[in-house]
Length: 89
Length: 205
Image (cartoon, rainbow over all chains, first blue to last red; front, side, top):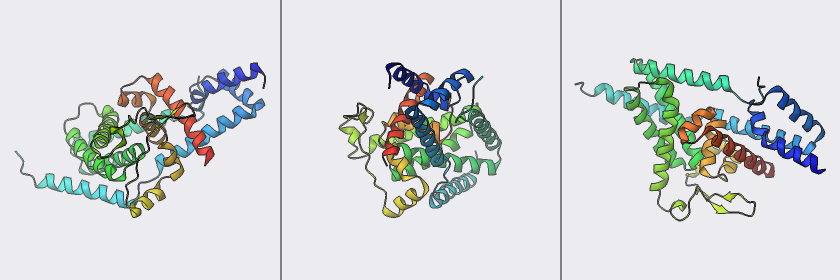
């Protein structure tokens, strides 16, 4: 890898989160995509980060275990029932 | 003009609006809305506590705390749009309290924020013991990707909280900054580092 290519890689990687978060303008995005087209190493980093973010989001959208959800619903019912029974001022 | 690669700004706004609407309905006396809001608050508490602190037993306590505090808060709320950041701030504080109370917690000896210097340059966070009974552990492992949870535990807790709120819970950068009391630039910098660390950890698996 040449020195200029290395500098280009460094600059790209510094902006990669902004790129993945859709915070860069079209020109900046195009520059990253063009670089990745000729730099397999940076392309792999971008894909790896995209995959990592996807895995994290999958965890975030996974439903809680049913016993935990059942306990949550039961706690809510107990609280609301107790509040109904409490004498009002 | 920005392009959309992986962000969900419209989803973040929709979720914030949906929370605010639910809070308004609950505060106006809608019993079903109150029930849904309280269940949701507990789910947020459980997920945050489990993923950030790593102790399933604490997660149950943090759920209870979120339930009671949300119920009290909703009845005197003045700014429903701020509910979501209030909830995460409350849950995070409850997690911090649990961590301080925990007997034998390594943070008594070593700052968990600092961790232990490693050969990779970044500090290696203190390992959090897993104290869940086997059945609970199997249940948790079945629900949440073990590789991701293990990789998360290698991050410093503050970065872990950012990843959980930003990537898993879908909070905006601004909301995460509000919850943690840091700048948006700081959130972005830490998130970038955390993503890169997670990528490396997950590629090794």
